[in-house]
Length: 415
Image (cartoon, rainbow, N blue to C red; front, side, top):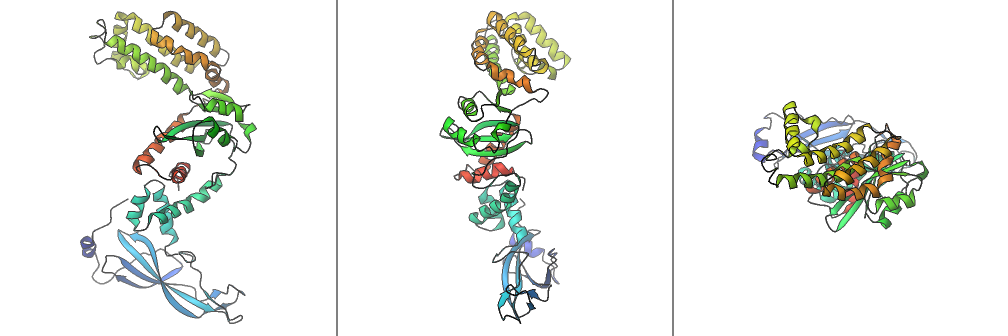
């Protein structure tokens, strides 16, 4: 958000012979404009209509006029106050008095609709305090604007502010956790992987927290697969609430688990006598994807591997998993995985052998990835939302009210 001009700068920009304000509100006619001592613009307006329909008997009449001060969007950094000359009408038929409708601001509102919309949009991507300071309003008003802007967007997606309505049910779900207060409080995020949207965010990550979240799905029988990491609570919750759905372990987490073990192998060789010189500043040749290397880097990696055959074998076993995910089919995946597990047990280094327990424990869920090809079910979208959530929390120095954090995650800055 741009900074406002200082008072001295503002006074220097004031036209000597008058002020021309492009109000851009077609229902009003500008009556007068005045530059205020506090650096703001005062614009006096009146509705173009000459009469109004009686709220009681639908007849038209006119009575008197009174000024109402309304806050509008800033104009090139100048605060703008509109003085709306609102007229009161007296019905000639039923003799009732009423005030003409204010479409630009709304009934009994002291701000224009477009100002509230602008505040709501800014509050979706900036902290409440920052938005309140910029627009010169209170934090509570900023939260109200955010909720007013977000509610119709959520209703279009079948969601609501209360976090109680039934959730739309896609074929593929993604579920993950993030820390609201690291080490103390966690939350669960549920995503629609088909339409790439966040379905819900709820406090807690334990079994008793996740099951009620999944049971809010309007048509749970439609869920075919749920993508997740190797969490101890998510899998039992899915089996309890969605027994017909396949659990798919995200392939990124599988490779990440293997890479943790392989990094230990590379690090151990880098500290051995044989590898200190060979791997000095060249460990990345074994850790990064080979398709990203130049021809010279590939030759250098092969040269080091020929002198450290045990490290070369571990690298080949690591790359075999990446190739397996890229080329295996539902018919060949299980046999190729069993062969790889046997090869690691016979020829792999100790850290990679220890990592095999995860492959054995989660074998059906890892293989489920291939049942839905060519659709590559992944938690990548969910992880991206988690990264965005962490950025939101850093911008706001954390959220004391979880409902506000949930609202920002659901709208995703798309107001």
